Length: 508
Image (cartoon, rainbow, N blue to C red; front, side, top):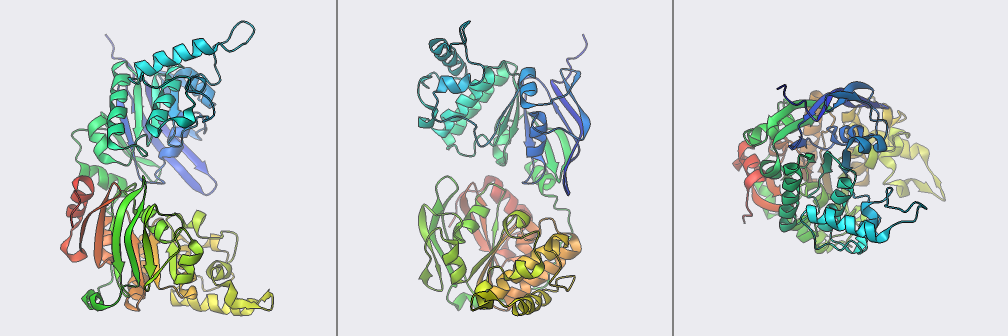
């Protein structure tokens, strides 16, 4: 007998948006009854690929086959009719409706006169919930009263109500505790035992070992590995494919022994800082002239810690002090006034005014210094911006240049110049060289090291372990929102850090 064709094949899928090639010839093959894990860092193309699969995006090129036959997924309805359902990380349930009403939303059981058969819907929903191993969920209960784990089950029941054959799960365990994750895995096992395929997206690589059959890895819109065996592929190889650590790193030498900073008073002190569901209590001190790195995989709580220190997120516990003075929790205004600056991970979306000039991008956090009786001294603003950008060798040397026309490295310099002009004492750097070429990376490394040598305190986050080890004086290693190890950067190497982020346990 001829072998069964794959349930789903996506071949050479490309998708572009203005200025961005999100997918560049991606392949994906999924067999019936398997858990196929889709991995990659933020921006790798995972979300775009699953939206193509869900019918929400139309590919520019490539072919999709379903059970061996070419198909066109023109809409989410077309995908659902084939048997493809997507459960996004942000669940699209209606909290005010009951479980049963959510399960059959859009295809409610009705009479010949289109009257909804409420009892029949609840009975059918109960049968689906029992199939998923959760008969305790009441079909009549409002979804808004359920836990996050129970809402995940309701989303799966809704998918099964369409006779689905493939379910895409986008970070399904992100908001679940360990017991709930175990229940989720039991549910996935029961689905695959019935022949349902699951495309499973997660940043938690240890889950891939527990639940996955095969792995496809995306990086920068390309599939760098397709259909690897999840159980036998070394974790270190997967991390290498995700992060692409074969980049050349050129770090300036440490110009001084930072041990001398140990006697200085901390400019930044974080005590028991925590956010429920994101990261456990964190303690750290940062002294003038010191670079402290946070190392860990995406989803480990690194960026969330920086944003909480900056006041963009309100902590559930703990406090932040700058030069001995506590900050008001959850207040960016208070953080900036105290001398904290943030260069965020997504600089184009979160930091830059893309349609404005370099001058306006650099001066935007210091406008009060250029105010003159109700108007802005444009000449003084421009001169200050030029001085700040020249200090960082931003090119071209023209403050009137639209920031959107700059390279990634020079856009990052514009963000750094903003905080230099503001006179910040603590600089928070989240993925400072993302989207920056090798030559510009070396320049940025030199800038960061020089700023520290001049007394700036730097808290650094990077997905690339060599970058953390090459720049930082001390490193905090994070795993699933917890600090599992703290050490001098010179005491660590890349393999040791990767072992800790994958398998580490909290240490003092």
